[in-house]
Amino acid sequence: QVQLVDSGGGSVQAGGSLTLSCAASGRTFTNYAVAWFRQAPGKERTFVASISRNSVYKNYADSAKGRFTIARDNAKNSAWLQMNSLNPDDTAVYYCAADLGGSGSSTNPGQYQSWGQGTLVTVSS
Image (cartoon, rainbow, N blue to C red; front, side):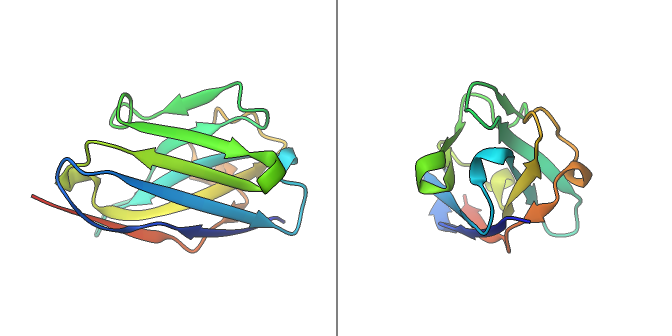
């Protein structure tokens, strides 16, 4: 399994921006589709965005479309989630996840085998 480390969370005011990072190690990163999920307090973990192994395919939750951008650099074994126009509803712990051999289309957290530890994003009004 690839090991993932999330970072970049923090506290911002509504309308602000954050970029989350996901650093991978241990296995060939190019073999993995990558996704970001989030989990708000007392709620289930939900899909935010995903990207295919070659970055050709990207998928976004409706709540993320137009505001968030997912990207990856296989040479750097890294992925990112750029988040703009944040609002309090975006407050959650954000997790990077990887799916070996996946297409990057799955929004189901059960499809992903490797997970980062999570990074907290807090958006105040």
